[in-house]
Amino acid sequence: MNEELNIENASLEQFITHEVGNKMLAGELRLSSQLNQFAETSRQEIQNYFLSPFELIDVHAFNNMEGLENQVYEIAERLFDNQDDFIQESKALAEKVFNDANHERIKSAHFSVVYFSQLAIEDELMDAIGIFRSENELPFIKMNQKETQYEIQHDLGYPLNGIDKGCLILQTEKSDGYRVLIKNKYPRAAESQYWIYDFLKVIPIADDYNNTKELLQQTKSFVVSHLDKDMPKTDKLEILDRTMNYFNNNDSFEKEGFQQQVLQSQNLITEFNEYEVNKELSINDSFDISQKAVSNQTRNYKSVLKLDKNFHIYIHGDKSLIERGTEFDGRKYYKIYYDKER
Image 1 (cartoon, rainbow, N blue to C red):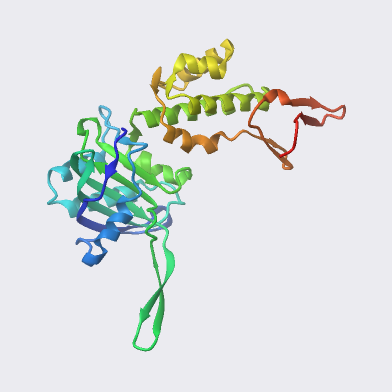
Image 2 (cartoon, rainbow, N blue to C red):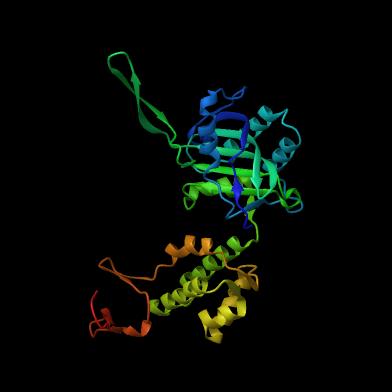
């Protein structure tokens, strides 16, 4: 999906917030019975708070395999057909996220459900349903001007520069599980995974972004976690370096060419193909490379050689300039050759 999401003319139609605690910590679920009230002058700021974090990258869809129930998909389907039961459907979503919380580190949150209209992808207008968790309140200072002085107060609230967790369900591609955009401020935290896998039950769609992201992640996992632990770390770092060079220097991925340029040896190619089968991966033979995905994965591909707690060596080039050995007393060493200091 290479289009852009246009929120310039979006309109907030309905907006409700519930309080969702963590039942594992004796937290409570407090459901609202009416829509939120807000000043009309705040409408644009509220819309920006919810919508501005989303881009049409890393797109997901509801996992609707045969026999698999997906309550969030079903509620979205009903709301897109008829908004009359918006409050009741929002309560059902709040109850589900409360019941699905299965980790004691999941924070209490203000849980908001918002119905938008007039979002656009290219020339196509569509509605969207937003589901959001606001978790981390921050203090702020309010300065209220009086006749001869200012009255200073403080309060707690949510910064406008980003939601904690959110999803935006776009009213398009219904038969394929809609198109769902995900935001998670702390995506690697174990307690955050329930948001995608337990509550939303979404899977990435097979577009260029996710194909690129998946291939880079699986290649790194294959090299770091699967290859023989006795393989020198410098050899593994060289494979990772060739992987990133391939994706930075090519517009499209071709499986055979990738394997020849990156893995090089037939033994490694065979092992990678077996790894793909055993992990039940479905790597496409060819796809256009998403440079956005490459950029987002770059930090995971840093070639860093970590030696005890004393040294980190960053390797960016020729592995032959590093010599590995062992002293007579068993201590290991690396000898590094170079022409000049910079």
